[in-house]
Amino acid sequence: MGDQNRVYLFDTTLRDGEQSPGVSLNVEEKLEIAQQLERLGVDVIEAGFPIASAGDFRAVQTIARHVRQPVITGLCRAIRADIDRTWEALKEAESPRIHTFLATSDIHLKYKLQKSREEVLAQAVDAVKYAKKYCSDVEFSAEDASRSDLDFLAQVVEAVIDAGATVVNLPDTVGYAVPEEFGQFIRTIYERVPNIDRAIVSVHCHNDLGLAVANSLAGLNNGARQVECAVNGIGERAGNAALEEIIMALYTRQAFYNRKIQVNYQEIYRTSRLVSSLTGMVLQPNKAIVGKNAFLHESGIHQDGVLKERSTYEIMNAELIGINRSNLVLGKHSGRHAFNERLQELGYTLNEEELQKAFLAFKDLADKKKEVNNDDIEALVKDRAWAVPERFRLTYLHISSGTNIVPTATVKLAIDKLVFEAAATGAGPVEAACHAVDRITDIYGKMLDYKLNAVGSGKDALGEVISRIQIGDKLYNGRGLSTDIIEASVKSYINAINKYYYEQQRLAE
Ligand code: KIV
Ligand code: ZN
Image (tube, rainbow, N blue to C red; front, side):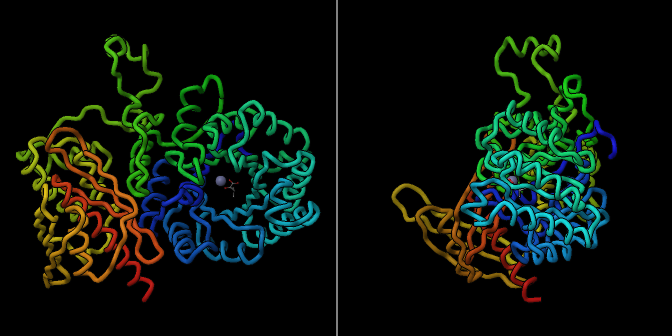
């Protein structure tokens, strides 16, 4: 079955990753991420869980229609109605795969499913056979495999392969395994399942003990051929194995693992940044591979060593994964051509209209900030990913705030061709401005999370605010950018309100 040495990268950022507490992506954001994953070159994209909600269904369907290179899959329980719905979402994909799952551990059987082993075995086989009627590529996941009775698990794996499963996934659902044991577990499945060579064995490890990547690699080293992971390691609870860490471990330690992957390494960093900004999940600075500090050397001895010979203290090359170290600045005299060249260097190809918009934003920024660096430029174009039609646009903001005065904000918003004004007070200037926005829009959001990042360095650095806003029972991420952090905060709030408004319009259509 294909090249035995090849490792297939299965990305579940949009399914398990989106199950990270507090993360909620809309269809456009999911498509943007899926297109970036396609550029990165992953083999499989798990685009969502179609039966979970109308939004999930639409996201899987949209990605199936527009992202043609990788296999596109959607998750479903081992239930016929779930499988029907998943196929409905996937059917236009170039290479669809139905991914169905059922728990096999006694703990899950007893407390969650309240079913006997015989019933679970029959249900798993039925689900695979049923999915197979729609689609030749069917993956079966034995949920909580690593805590399952090995004899029973081997029986289930053999039966689902006989029923037509092309991929069998053995997850460490609760992140309980340790590497030596997990590697041995995969080896044992190979030894005990006589028809195992008819399917691809996959691993899917959670990070509850911080071992998701180590366990996945141990699984691969013991014969697994597909690895399920998520960008930046996001996912349920402590997350999934981090895609970028798996890729770079296999690349950097190729002599040890001797396995092949096919990815466009240059896209790793950009993929990580996109997922971080759209999910609002900011990376810890010391995050392996993609954290801010991953390639920085603080100690003089290290710096000296790297200047003499990079390999003294660096095992990977930052440029390989798309980190641009030459951060030459642009300024207000830089022209459109230089700006566009820098964008191309950074890997952004904009159409004429996008370029003009970005260039005007750059000029505006260069007026306020002496030196504009790569981080600033990326921050400007990243706006594309957040773009929703601007029903409400900030045209004016005045804040009165300080010690011993009640913070007061006056806000003007353009709606179509009219401009509306409101004033309000709050515990702080951001709250005051958000209250004023609420008065104009008549949409009342609750700010659940608020993060302010400085883009680049210096007192005149751009402030990027990522907020998570609850409206009704749904969550919306908003992003705002400005050299004035109160303005960035209000823009972020309005961005979330625009997403809500846009979604309401779409639902009403
Ligand atoms: O962790 C898990 O077991 C899963 C399966 C549904 C694949 O996410
Ligand atoms: Zn999982």
